Image 1 (cartoon, rainbow, N blue to C red):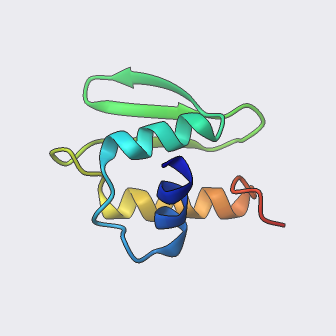
Image 2 (cartoon, rainbow, N blue to C red):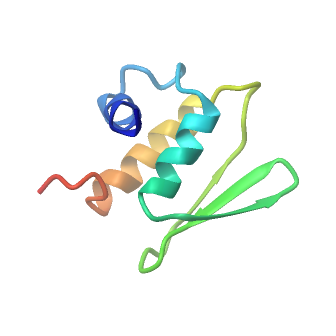
Length: 82
């Protein structure tokens, strides 16, 4: 399941149709640690200077946050592609 979520995030075709909980699981699987502050979920990975801050929209992730996460995955090669 996590691989299909990674594929959905990386494809860019489903930015507004990814469940927030699936996105949380993906970030954790990619090595990010999670903390919450109110309705904000903040992710940080060792060795990466950037933090990811996401909030749900109902039970879905927000499209602009998916695009931000896709950029970080590409920038730091977190999907395992060379």
